[in-house]
Image (cartoon, rainbow, N blue to C red):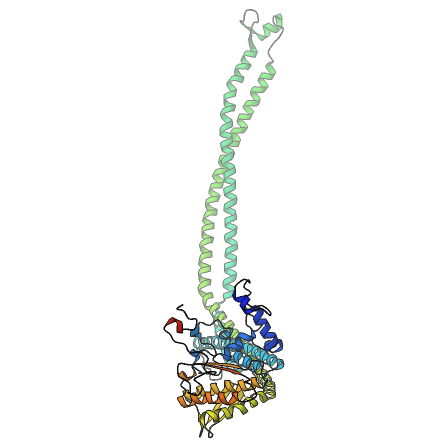
Amino acid sequence: MAIREGKLDEIAKGDEPSTGLEAFLDAVEKSLITSSVAGLIPRHRQEHRGWPIALAWLTRDQECRFDHVLDWRSTASDSESPARALNQTEKLDALRAFLRAITPEEQAKRTEIAELEAKKHALDQELAHRRWEAGRLRKRLVSTLGVSVDMPAESSIAMGQLREAAQERFAKETGIATTKDASEVEAALQDYDAAREEVTAFKLKLGVAEANIQTSERIIPKITGEIPGLSYALQEANSFPCPICEVPIDRVLAEGCKLSHKLPDLKACGERLERTRAELAEENKRLQSAKAEKLQVQQQLAVALQREKTQQERVKKLQSARNSREAAWYAAKRLIEEVAQLAKLTEEQTSAEAKVADFVKAIEEERQRLGAFVEQQARAFSDISLKFDPIVKRLLGPDAAGTVTLTGNGLDLKVQMGGNRSTPAIDSLKIVAFDIAALCRSIEGASCVPAFLLHDSSREADLGLSIYHQIFALARWLEGVGKTPLFQYVVTTTTPPPADVAKEPWLVLELQGAPAEKRLLKCDL
């Protein structure tokens, strides 16, 4: 629940609907972190928020065991803290934002450098691939052409040797008269096409002749069947029956005695018979002509088919011969093309290397400008170092010294005791001392996080018992600064604290695993 000016007792009754944490996080961010600082926290505008990330720093996981100053949430803790999604650089930027040790200008410059480095990385990968491809191609060309290239691969002399060898190989292979082969094959293809067209034409003529024969053979029997009837009709016209007694009458007698008033048309019958006989003769003539043409076309078609087969075999032989010779011709041609490709790859490689050099130069220039920003913010870490050193002396003794430095590689914590010390116990102590130094800065109002700190099981992080007790002594001393305590420092531990603070008001709560009433929520979940 997050209700502005809400009453805890009323909220605890559960009458109000759930609001979620959004309103609370917004309020803390605006009043404590401030919007300007929150804008400097990496990925803040996405799902991350300033306060949960700050809380991750102020309340380190026990599983992190104080191994690194920027280790706040362990992956083994199943925490949903947004800090888990930040890398070390992003956590350092967030820490600097909380300590007011970074500016929007510096962060913008960091973004520019990151973009330049990403482009350089992509170009480096592309360059490596192009270098590998060029090397493989060059090795194959040297082996195929049988040349010895002692110069560097990217030199113009080495490229010239490969180009000259490829041209010599091509000139040798073109002596086979490839162009002549091509013209012969082209002419043979034209002859073959002409032969095929001729065969097609003869087949068409043969089909027409066969169709004419079939037509004539159907018509001739019909005409032949009509002639007897026409001949009989003519005969009947010359000796037609008497209309009275039906006895045949001679035409001359009939015309002389005028016995009949209606005589058959003898002329028409004769003309019809002659016309039919003429049609029969014409059709027979057409039939014979069609048969003669069919025979002739069949003979011509046989010749054309033989010519087509001959031309087809010729084309196949010429193409086979040309292909066998062109294999060598094309191989030589391909060598010239591959040398040109190698030259192009080499040129692109040189250009890419120049671009990489430009990126390196630009990144270096931007880093120098970034260094100026870092130097401007070094005062904040210098102030922390001024507090870190006396804390280290308080915990380890007056001979010890400590420094906090912001470098290009991150935050550098050092403890000197007759030389730089770096052991698991000293490394844990560095982190404890840094957090307390940052707490002191918060007491002074020099940070944008509250003067609050929680160390979870710090004794178990390889701290010696004497150092562990000195942490409580230091907290007691800080408690005396000012009229009332200006901070809240919580230590959760299974190791008993010093006797002088193992009581109220410092000992707030003592828990046990059993019985259930001794647990935090006083029940067995």
